[in-house]
Image 1 (cartoon, rainbow, N blue to C red):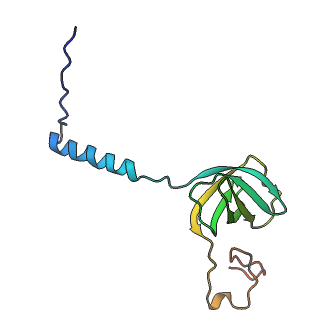
Image 2 (cartoon, rainbow, N blue to C red; image 1 turned 180 degrees about the horizontal axis):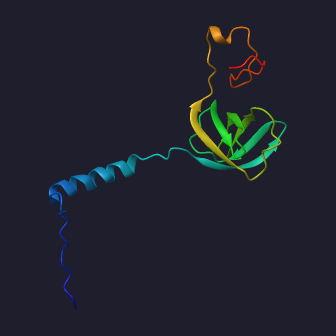
Image 3 (cartoon, helix red, strand yellow; image 1 turned 135 degrees about the vertical axis):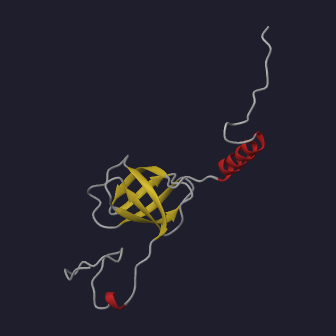
Length: 131
């Protein structure tokens, strides 16, 4: 029976101690790591409201983006699904499309440049006077 030897963890550029510290650091990171975005599948789209199945850790008022590039806001948070109000036309959105969390709460910039302007739900000017 072959003899099993303990491998040396020393690296060419560092010591065994530094490698063990690095491994400990990686283990710590792996326990606290969060993905930069979450994806979910669209269940149903009707009258500008999308029902998305299990979009993990989403916040009320968080902006989401559909596979077509259309954006929406999460409003109805339930255990099994999330209700999302679609900004704009929902004709490009289909059942089964992927939905991505953005991680940001919907906000609209406010200032003198916005006075007397017509904007959409995302604060983008739609009055034809430019940005």
